[in-house]
Length: 304
Image (tube, helix red, strand yellow):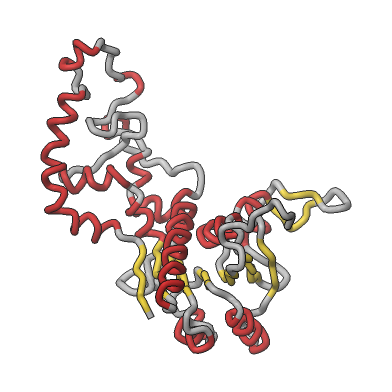
């Protein structure tokens, strides 16, 4: 580092990344971008699943395909990688050594998998009492769906975003998937925020924290106004990707005519009508805030 270069925000922070594919790697990539030292644990021989998700691949020295797919590169920059067999005693011992020198562990194994290997949260706490642990799963560590596997495509459907970006009822009502793994990416964003908050708590109190983050919870949380619209109006917002958020869906062929300010009262989405619809929402905020928070809360922290 030059004399004129300041250290990055998270310089000196070490992350042990046991996650794979997209949600967890998105989180650790953001932390790495901010200066954290991220050690990514991959399976021997095959590595992260996304290394083989191509084409395209980065060409190797002979011009053939390497094991670096464009997909893998999109979520794994600024990291160091190590191959460890977690099914072996030697691999478990190596992870324990890495935990001892790490500040954060992030993983996206199915609930209970790491516990069976002796690498669960309670096991790691004995080695590093103030560890910040982030567990990403499809549907959380507890509850009726805990044992189910969650994927971006599935969660986009279950979480409602496919109906919002889909067609209106009059156009057939077919749901449409967002073209990217947006549920995974947003889950990674929530994980980043949760980890930074937990680190702040650790620095202030000396206590580590456990973050239980579900892909499904995160998807529901970032439905933003579509979710609160449903709570307030008791109706689903369907096929409104090209419509006006505070009024019924408007298709491209049904866009409202441009009016002068003096004529705004004749338009259904005029400021006056928006204010009228906003008044009961504003007045009701304190009354249903607890319900909104309960439905949309996607991260649960436990002080140790």
